[in-house]
Length: 117
Length: 112
Image (tube, rainbow over all chains, first blue to last red; front, side, top):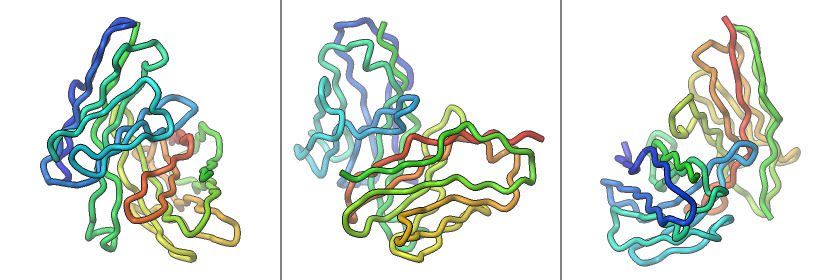
């Protein structure tokens, strides 16, 4: 069990306000990811991190920033939320699973549903 | 760039019917291929994977074979159950720590 906790699980906010979503993991995995899920688009990568203070952009990074000051926490910030950022956000970690033949696979958190009015 | 295309849903089947969800991919090199499942209100769970050509991934009665010649990774199950109702995502990953590129998902509904 990767021990991934996302918070908050649900949030409603207004356009123009800042929002921070938190992803917390308990097993010191190096790689962490933020995806958004939207109908008709599947999941799209926003940002990812390959270590403390090491982050990079994904496919849909505009309007988002991330920070990773500790191995266990990966924060996603919307500096000024817009209605187009209404979505379900998933955090993931890359872990080695013996049950999967020792391959690295992505394991996902339960998601954070964000509504921007 | 890399991409995954999976059949449009929703797919509605009767219990015990045979399931196929088509997935094809475009990628350079030799990606790993995955199927994830998302039950209502939950996050994604890994269903099965294959890391090289001709590998067959299997789990919970589901199977998929990595076909490099047709760049496909179709998901099959011989007899679906109501509890299989979910959204299924095909995905690919290049490299051991690469991120996943997902298809748009296929919603499956199984009726008793």
